[in-house]
Length: 350
Image (cartoon, rainbow, N blue to C red; front, side, top):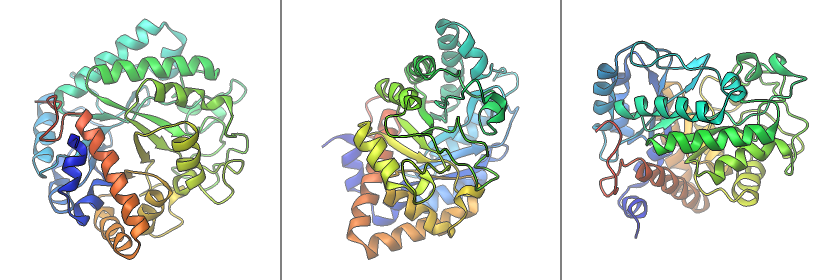
């Protein structure tokens, strides 16, 4: 039995449910979430907001969070660069936008990602919610609110973006920081932002779309995670947003692209696109569709989501099996990050 499977075998139903949750906490006061990590055995913690705090201060807080549960949580940040960079200041220099890096050489991209990952690894961050694998057509550019408007894309050609995504994944994970490709199956062609709108629709993407190339490249490079978009893709599933779509998560990502790693949601706490159902139901629907780790930036969502997952697992043997599989994927990522007691490599920040 491998390390993740052995750890999973020792978890209670409540602990398995906790592993499927990544809960946000302000980066200025991460220890605010310590009690929730301990109570719900959370699978992950997301440091939300922006910070210029020192590496030493952040390391101390992250160490405390990781020590709050027998199976330490993954600790994630948004450290893409440009407009999306959680950690800044003397210990975390400003990073170029992906668009700028995409215009440069692969060596410069590799060097930038490596340096950023080394700094994250040094404080105990185990997951960077990057790279962005979305391709924004040149004809759309800044007219794409979530990606193009902030220059978060590596470029407008999916083949070139695919090469850059593969480079970024290898560079980051080579320094011990797991990557999460986002936002599957692509946000580059929508005209609304899922954080503040329920009208983000991509009516173009199909199962054979060339804009899936960057995600496929990141998967081939071994990315530990993939994040699911909260937009709607009617040519893939007419039923609703990708977050709750079994055809997109299980059918396209798992089965067609052959991905067996960690599948995360985008934020389902504050984002308008996900708020069409009650809080606990959001977690249930994502896991039932094939997802593993539910991300919410709202700390108050931890209890309702954990309770809903446990209740649904008790009600449905099929869902219980799916939740157990989700916990397995989370634990496998933790093993890669060196977080499990039986992991063969030391964890970041040690």
